[in-house]
Image (cartoon, rainbow, N blue to C red; front, side, top):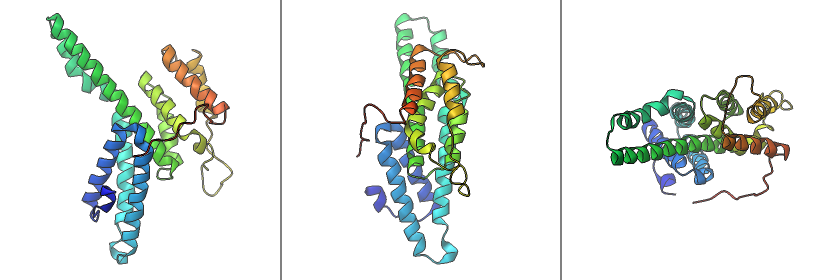
Length: 242
C-alpha cells in the first residue's frame, strides 16, 4: 500500500519502483505472487493516471511496460543465463582460498564461498519464479517465457536446470494454454520437445552429454510427472501473501 500511494509520475520514479519491487521479489521468492500482483496494481494506477492526462503526455504506461521488460531481460541474463556471471562473483573468494595457507582462515573462506553460492542460487531461482508469476497475470508474454525455457534447456550448469524446473512448475499449466499467435487462438505453445529433452537428461540419454546429479534428475522427473498429472500437484500449497 505504501508503494501504491507513492506519486509515480516520472520515468525515473517508475524505474526506481520497478527495481525496488524486483529486488524484493527476488529476495523473497515465497512472496513472488504478491509482488507480481503489486506490479499489476502499479500498472493499473499508471494507466488510470495516463487516462486523466492530455493525449500528448501519455507516455507513462508505455514506459512502465518497457522498463519492466528491460528489467526482466537484464535480471534473467545476469542472474540465470550468463555462465560467466557466477564465476566472476565467486572468483575473488576462490583466489583467496588458493593462496591461503592458514587452515582456520581457509575453512572460514570456504564457508563464505558456500554462502555466496547459496545466495546466487537463491537469486536465480527467485528471478525465474517472479518471471513465471508475472506471466501468469499476463504481464509478460508467452514469447518471453518460451525464450527463457529455450535458454534453460541448453544448460551450462545444474543451476540452470533447477531454474528450468522452477519456471515450468510455475507457468506450465497456463503456458500450454497460451496461443502462440492471437490470430490463431487454437494453436498454443507446446512443451513436448522441452519435456522430451528433460526426459533424456534425467535418464542419462541426452545426445549432448548433459550429466547431472541425482538430485537434479529427480527434480526434472518431478516436473515431467507433474505435467503428466496435468500440472496438478499432490500438495496444493496456497501462495503466501504479505
